[in-house]
Length: 96
Image (cartoon, rainbow, N blue to C red; front, top):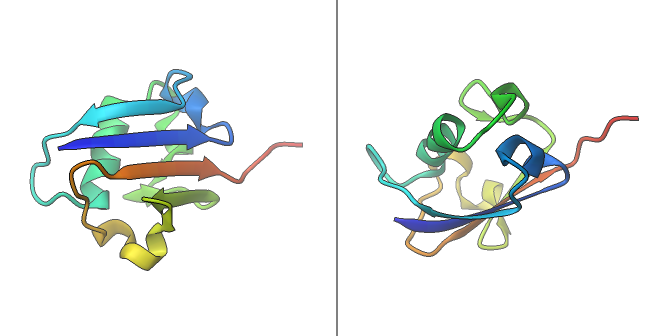
């Protein structure tokens, strides 16, 4: 399944400095966000996966949008993904 993922707010540093990545993912079970997150952790994160995920979901402070809609409106981890979807991850956490 072809998807596009985007990173901002510093998250791109965990993904080799890439802000946009075109993916072609083969899901093991269903094409849902929980499967995508595990796939991304195992295949895309280049450093510190603990800063991206906590347990089986994204860490608190990371906004997730699916086709410009908050993933909480789409079903969070159970949100179904379709061919061509755009998933955006935005970190709201900043050091000081």
